[in-house]
Amino acid sequence: MGHSRIKQLVIGVLPPLVTESIRGLHRRLNPPVAALEYSPRGWDESLIAGAAPGWNAESVVEATRAENAESFRLLQKGGPLGTGHQHNLHVSFAYVLARAAHCKTSLSVLDWGSGLGYYCYVAKAALPEIAIDYHCKETAVLAAAGRQAVPEASWYSDEACLSRKYDVVMLSGSLQYAQDWEGQLRRIAGAASDWLNLTRLPVVERAQTFAAVQRVYGSVMLHWQFNRASVLDFVESLGFVIEREFEIGDRPYVKGAPEQCELRGWLFRRVKPR
Image (cartoon, rainbow, N blue to C red; front, side, top):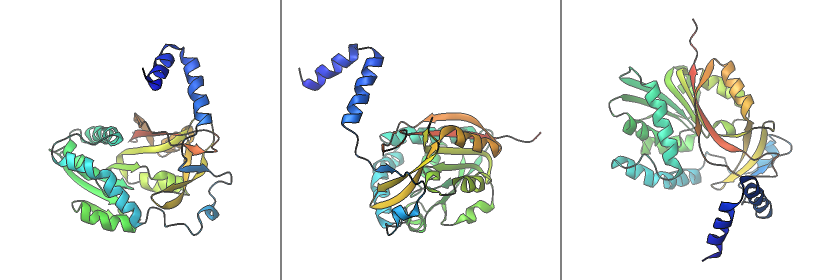
């Protein structure tokens, strides 16, 4: 019997408190490789001075295309809505659209931070009987590539997309890159006539919101880790209530952080005035 198998059997018969202590000790002695590192000085632009231009880079386009290629291929052939962790994200998005499409024959969607726009195809696969009017907001480089990858969507690289209302507004893995995240969220949420989907958001329970430096796809960016309660309270102040919470499953390691984060998601419903 192999060493790893013996370890699994031993851990399996120990009380939960003991096994969690063992796992905690293992994490301290063998910390994960850090793509994120705590910034004690907060959102400090000097930490990324001279770095590559964040998400507005060709390296991000290539990485996004490669990451989504298999899910996109299967989606077009009637396969699963995604592979690996993407399946959970895409099924959650399908649930959001199903709630929003109740008693409707068409649906308008704004995908803020859309990458190459593949969620447009998830929407069409999830609700084939509903006419989907899909709008994508991205950086200039990603938007240019997205117009080629998903020409059915309307593309924006500025805030002109906020000049109208949408049935659903989604921010997936994007709010954490806005220095003035409250101001940006207020503007974006204002475009949601009924539903706001805020997902893939790194949150902590006890620590206050803090900043980290992220190194990914050859770029270096500043990145918020949000105090969960502060974000939910702020969205509520904008006139929304929680309809559903989503388990994302990812727990990116932040070196030196006061508390480790996990990614969460929520579907919010706008409260209509009486």
